[in-house]
Length: 258
Length: 178
Image (cartoon, rainbow over all chains, first blue to last red; front, side, top):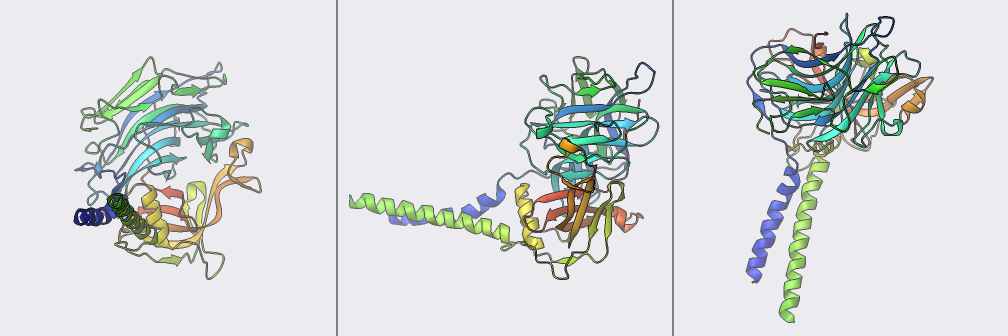
């Protein structure tokens, strides 16, 4: 009896550090990518006011955190990345403000999943890496400052709404576009070999049945809008759809197993 | 009765051994011991503009001998552990610098800017915050881009190890408009 107990004790002592080090380990999926291109699956929303001017002022939505997808092989393309975001774009120039989630390679080849924002033609800034469980909805909002001069990009967490007290501003330095339009899209950097988030049975959601993706125009009202499918890169593997006239959107990659 | 006491004592020993092993594993991760590869940080010598689009800068520390609460190794390993990373070594292609990070968000936006640092009408996520900046190049060997355009950054608070910001440095692109 005593000998058996000693054996169990030794086994526990040996295995416990391994358990502590391997909890919550994501797999590092990698695929072969040859073509160096940006690929998009996008929806856009345009609107004009009574004067005929573009008046898309903001976009907001809960975006589902998914930790699937696959990046290009690290040794060949350490800069590959993909993301899912909502955005307000400048229609006739290259400006964009966007928020959502990104995956990228950390040095050495570890895959990370983080929240992300970007403005202008500047760099994507990431934060809150692996901050959520898979399938968690996180609320993001992009809207004008109270004086209407700049965009506020705010992360409103998981509380389920956009109350100021629940939100953290990540940036409010970008002046508003003269001709804005809304967007929601999955993007892959290094082309079609890379897998976007979501699979057919657990798709990447933007908006939920209880909290739609919404647009804001000069009327000051947030509501679901009519979105147009803009382009269809990598269409044999990247799939998108919208539900109930644009209340929600779904994206997935046919190659993802989970 | 005597047998039960012996069993109880055995269970206590097993539990203590398990706990000690768990603590050992955690200590190894937090201290950069065990299998962890140490990384030493150099102080930033001249101000680096990390992202000119948002005026994010990484400046030399205020003192010649800054003494943050954590080493560069400890902060990075804690961050990796917090983000669920399996490995306990710091990738060899990552270098670290110690400096003062400033990341403005924009003009003071009143109640919306709650939780941010407000100074002289501007709001900041970080304002001269002592931080470790970890960087690594992601350009393929064949790349002709300037080195500065190949760097990715992660900034961690040098006293707590909490993440402040990361910068991907990707080529600008966006989906076509309608």
